[in-house]
Length: 484
Ligand SMILES: *Cc1c(COP(=O)(O)O)cnc(C)c1O
Image 1 (tube, helix red, strand yellow):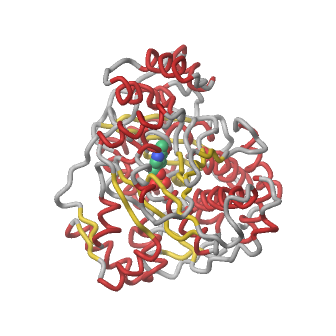
Image 2: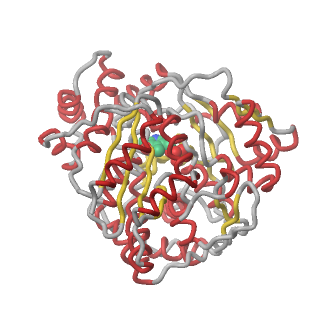
């Protein structure tokens, strides 16, 4: 597999090289140009999840040895049902829900980050190198990254989260981690501030030199790292194959996929799956009040200038600077155009597609956004009909009305247990703490609370005092000084 820099430059990387050094020239990312075709879906239908993942890694030409792939995919043994790690729930004749959150940290980030941890650590060991891995989180990347890298050889993680920008449960997942190779930093600021600070550190020669002087190289665990994206193609394929297996769709019949989007990694996985000829008609992007992505798809304009980040009950989507849109622009319009659009965004806070470019984008994507009261209504209505969803998944249901009569697969990205107080607020209109909310919803809807979440509240958290984003560099340096 060859990965190209999205803003131009002649450095072309293999998959493993891009895992280790994800940031490309001029502030860009790495992305493939040639997307392989999946081939006969009837044959793929017979594969279990692990073998389907292997097949897709092989098709895309990931340069990993068999041992590393096997270890990476053994991560799915930690999912609720290893033989069906991503169950597909049917909630009506037309709407199916891909439950992407049955992994150890109860959000879909586990699907890619669990194998990613094994891959990065194995590559580091083979090269006799040590990696400092940066992760900015709006609540789910952080727990999943810490979980996958805890005590893994040749790796250390620095995870930065916005104070007040995650749910209490998500925060507990991070600040109760005890492994010595993990460092959690809270900042005064929002997710965009955290992600921008880390992107700048990744690209900073000065910081890279400083880290090198301490015997480490820098990498990142956010979906700027292409290493995550391959694993996010697999579950879209799997959901379709499952519909085929159940006879819900005929071979070749197109479906729509609804993706609650933030950094656009999940949607990008669907985009590559569609390009690999998975029969997806439309990828429907669902947004919360921070509807910059749905705006882009409807109007062709990506505009930060009249926006401030709004804190919602779906915090993983409280993002305005969405990284992976760039990979779609690169794929559709090429490196030169991508660089110029990204420069417009950096210099003027906005970019605008031409009418022709927008037409092309709209052949692939549709979009809808839900405000907070629509999200609460969706949670409450679904619960009354016997299906409990978290707020991110709830954002999708308005979008399910789009796209004609095709079968829809909703990507359910988190378990409700991470956002229990929001469910109680939606259903009963009252505010309660996390433990009471977990107990109330669990008892009322006979919904189990996974051990990973229940046990959090008995642990001793160590809450870091929030710091300013421009202090992150010093904080990391001081931590490394105390490390062996
Ligand atoms: C990360 C996340 C999202 C957004 O996914 P992207 O791939 O960043 O677009 C949506 N919902 C939940 C629960 C998440 O953790």
